[in-house]
Length: 239
Ligand code: DX5
Ligand code: ZN
Image (cartoon, rainbow, N blue to C red; front, side, top):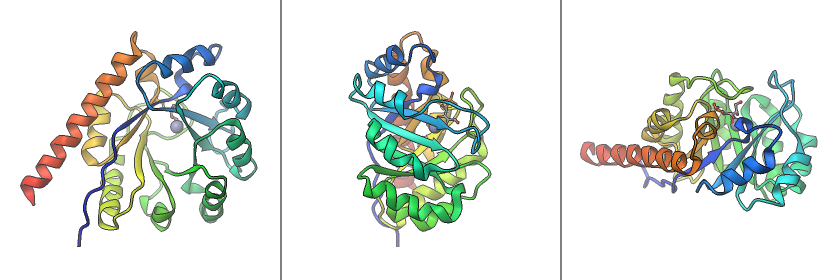
């Protein structure tokens, strides 16, 4: 039996990875004025992904100047030692990767006991089934729509069925986690994800290259909102 669909209000989360690395403070304030709800913070360790970004000290410095929800995405092989540091730095949500296998359960528990929102991410080559055992323990399921490590990559369309599956699980099991997408998100790809059930949209290069980020956020939100409404209408007609 299918339960009631529990769609969340849409959230736009600009990714600081696309900011000017010499001007994090200025650029995080730009996000603060843009109408976006979350600031997405990509943490890379040079091991889980072949790139390095920034650490908790940067997050802590930005926290003093921002009231956005800090959405920390840990692309790290050993998040265990980092969780407390990011909590103390001001993270509101912490996402770890399903690719960490048997350590996932304990990491989820640790994030929960730090009283942070819990996110679980799935890379494009990883089956969405790897996230299935944890769906009732998380606040956020992050379907990666590029292979993590770098901003500015092209959206991978083959990830769309995973969003559809996540939405089906959420509805059938009456769960409440958000479905987040990250990588290559613009008005067109955001709408494609929204149609399948995504409600939380990370966007880096697309939003940062806008002359007016506020207008860019508004347009992205409108595109995703219209796609959500359209797919809801289609489902009502078909049922
Ligand atoms: C990729 C990161 C993304 C990245 C998205 O490894 O997890 O958050 O910043 O950037 P765009 O939107 O440019 O693909
Ligand atoms: Zn990310």
